[in-house]
Amino acid sequence: MRLAFILLSSVVFILNVQLTRADEPSRTYENKLTPIRHPKPLLADHPEWVEPVRETNRWEAPAIVNDADADLHVRAWRWSYNARGIIETPNHLRASQTAIVMVHPWGIDDGQGWDSPEPAGVADFCTPAKNHLAATHTRTVIDPFHKSLRGKVAAVLYSLPGSCDPIRRKLYRSFTHNPGPEERKQGTQELDAKLRGFNYHGEPLPATLKLSEDKPVADYFKQFPGLDATARFNNAGFWDLPIPVTRGVQVFPDDVVVYDAEGYDKLREFLRANGVRHVLLTGYATDMCYAKTCAGYENLSKDFNVFLVGDATLATFPAHDTPKIATSAHIAFASLNQLVTQISWIKYEPRKK
Image 1 (spheres, rainbow, N blue to C red):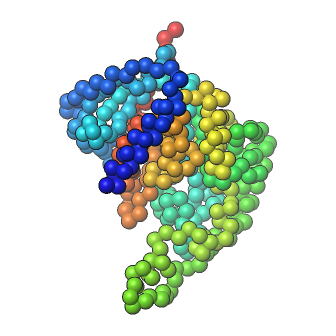
Image 2: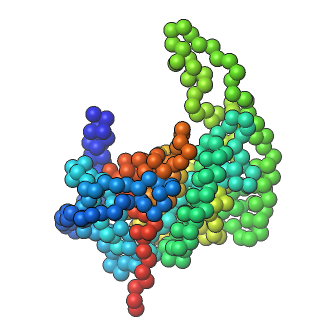
Image 3: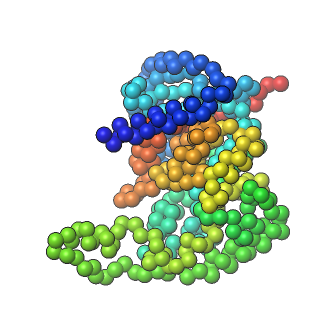
């Protein structure tokens, strides 16, 4: 019942979008599905990070995005309950009309000074060990992917919580300001002082709890929940600190940082003003920020052709020592209404003059 309601809501959303775009140029799309014989698993290039998708009922369909003068070729897939399988499509984009957007690359526990509070504070993937694991994924998977398309795509953007505070305004290019080398140096110094000057110490775990005879389980979790990121364990002011972009990716001077508090409308207008029609989405966390924050796919897919780069994201993974199963599950669920690609399926081929 829950799934049927979600699907019905999605259909209503799609119909509303179609009505609002009735005056835009259109083409007739031949929804022809051709069976794919002996398909290989999807998302299998990085099985240590994402559990491969092994559905064997697979179909090939014509290109959805088919730009004239395309030089960026992005194969993608989606799941359809009605087609009872996975549908794959080739897509042909103009790199000059494509942006890479990385959602919430938090610089936590990476030496910049913003650290998980002790002894029980939580942030990002919620333990220092999990944060370090995610940082390895950023360095070895996402950063090389970004660099492979630099100078080809229209822009690379990163989204972060909060607003464009005075320190980060000096560090990163924003919608309205691009700092020079001296200003960035000053911002780096101010960031270091701000982050290292904070007291990363909160309360310890509770030593005793008060449980009623009637509802001890409810009382237990009310007093000791699985995730409490408040000032109790993180210390007051932790979430007001200027969160930097992780050191796992190299931020270039013309890269743009997007702040959640500025709202999606400003992001949309910035992308449109720079001629962007397509988005390759990377970042964290697949089950939360990647979907629902300012630069998440629930916003971007209303106005742009979005491709979720399925092996360039990680989901949160409570009770597991690996994110691969959680990531695969959340990407698969997203594929009901999103196109999913993978790094090896994204090919830049400059047009011959």
